[in-house]
Amino acid sequence: MSSNDQDPTVHDLVGVGFGPSNLGLAIALHERRAQGTAPQLSAVFLEKQDTFGWHQGMLIEDATMQVSFLKDLVTTRNPSSDFSFLSFLQHVDRLHDFINHKTLFPLRQEFHDYMSWCAGRVQDQVRYGQEVVEVLPVHSGERVTHLDVVSRDAAGERTVLRARNVVFGPGLRPRMPEGVEQSARIWHNEYLLTRLNELSPKDDPRSFVVVGAGQSAAEAADHLHQRFPRAQVHAVLSRYGYSPSDDSPFANRIFDPEAVDAFHSAPEDVKRKLMGYHGNTNYSVVDPDLIGELYRRHYMEKVHGNQRLHLHNTSRVAGLTESPEGVAVVVEDLVTGKQTPLPAHYVVFATGYDPADARPLLGGLAESLATARDGRPAVDRDYRVVTDDTLTCGLYLQGGTEHTHGVSASLLSNIATRVAEIVDSVATRTADR
Image (cartoon, rainbow, N blue to C red):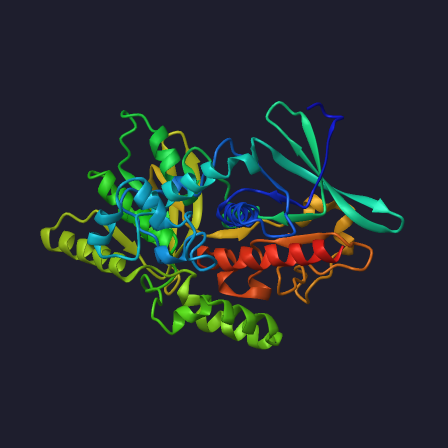
């Protein structure tokens, strides 16, 4: 399709991005059509990657999910769905093996395989290799009744899809400390395996620095320590040590749909308190088993006098100087202020992610969006962005709604129920129209 062509079809829904959230939405729409539920909703999803992929740089061989397989892409929405994780296990002839494993938490690689299997079954709804570059208004009189979603392929050719509703699922963007840029020797953990696999045998790194105190930081330190048995691994964290995640039954209720209802309707000061109270279910915390294993290994090396795993707690990186030979790191003790030089071949920043902001794609349309007091978009309970009366089509967010919907907004835990709510909202608006 040339840059001047437009798909003549008007779609009920166009999805921007095709990560786990919009994959769950595509499955819900697929099942709705298969069941003959009215109104039938047409949808197309645009994804800039050439195939489905989810945090592939962190698919460490022995890393497990932090969420139960029962919170897959469909089960809490439709327990009888054949898109469930258990259906996938049956398909690959591993169901009984998994049952015998007696765990709720599959390997991350296995869950990625499950999602890829799902993506392959709904690929008729997806156009890969398409990066959305802007969303334009289509006016009918003084109202914006449709949206033109403009995407570009690798050759630079543009495609325009017209939609009654747009669902943004742009995912997360790696966060680096202010003033630090990624380079050949300085990485965000999002690309850990990708960068390591690019190393040649002659590189033979002997020193890594891993910055961060959360699950990804601990996993990166653990992986590097095991993969490079001659390398020194320095973990730099501002806390006194890794803090355990709260996976207790009562705390996990924060991920239930009822908790989303309560959070969305709560006053702003209560929202802030709830995020503070239950941040340790997800943010900057580590699986207790992994903490125990790292401590065991660290202590064992002390006993044998061959320390390779070093923990620099209550510390921060105060300086980085990169050269062709490596990175000169300066680590500062937050208590004493003492600075220690630390030569490293590579530095890994496990410093988290920021939700991608959809507003830059909207251009002048962004003026129609209502904002919360902190400047972020105001979002209704059905994940539709609040707009003024001039915009009658729907803009929905899958991600970036922690301020309105709570901790589960960016997690796998609530995908199945969230997409059901979005589909119901779009269907209701379509029927009303």
